[in-house]
Length: 168
Image 1: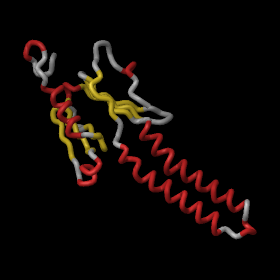
Image 2: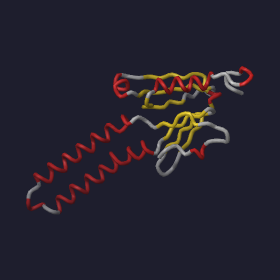
Image 3: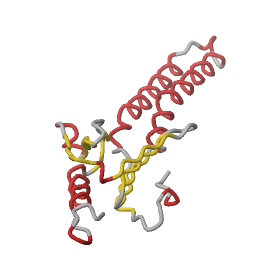
Image 4: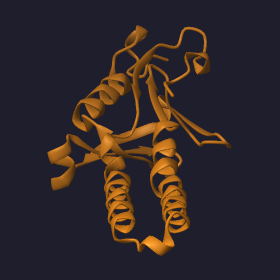
């Protein structure tokens, strides 16, 4: 699900549309591969007297586990979007019930990023924006987090008309 541009106000410009890094799907992929291996071994080793009912039970259990442990995390990942505009940071998440959070750029005081070893290998990181309200906005597994941090900083401190750093 891409960012819906209908969520933008008149004259608002979309700078970046993001989604969590695919790294977030690492464990669901491992689970899917393990489920496939277990089903394959289970069907191969199943006694002839238990077939075909045993095979159907094993496959049905694997499908339920795949939906719960693979498909649902993928759907959560796919339905979560992050948009950075020239005015605000917009997050939308949720499969059935959608939740949205908008943070105006003028309320952001500081932008930090954090990258551990695994994040550096995958090229992503955690972006933390401290707001005037004192409650930070933390975005995990942001691709190219250093570039995103620089772009947000440029938006925050870009000289607007009349020399106002926030363009107000």
